[in-house]
Length: 233
Image 1: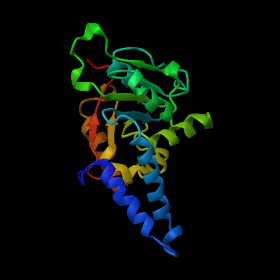
Image 2: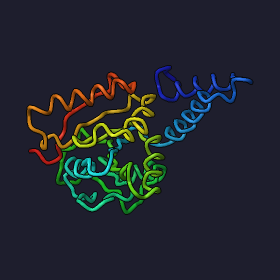
Image 3: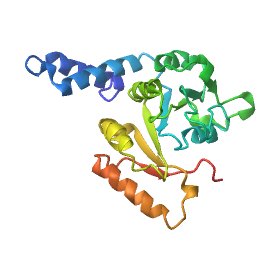
């Protein structure tokens, strides 16, 4: 087994954890490392040709619109009523049945999972095959169970795409409650400034620079920041 494989890295981490003795055994960092090792071990039980990507963000950030635009299928509800997404949706590029056990582990209801590809697509979607895109409930939902569901899934997926909007991109809940907590998983984090079509062209650079500064101050320097619009063609 190559030392660079996920399995080898997990074995190394587990070996180091097994060597730890009192009084370090109860340190927060070790508790966190054990949790990472446990989740990683669980994830490796499922097909590794799938990559799970979660769209997360606040109410009105455009997560569901982005999900629908990317999948080109309006499956996840988007609109003015809040919350619009009460449980996660998943779109699979590839064999849906092969992804079933992984989606069960993630807690996605069978009623909320579907496949993007069909025989009519031929190989049009080949470059995306193996991707599982999830639309999560709002992190600031008035329903506590929605927030709990987001907190759970964020620690299980391979990549998090955090969707910000021009109105709430500096929200303290987002930066202190979530993004800074994700700094330890920065290699699997992307931040998107969405709804850029609502900004005047002259304002976009300033808003983008403000958000970049907030990310850098929160320990997320180097994390990709992209400008997006789910409606702009």
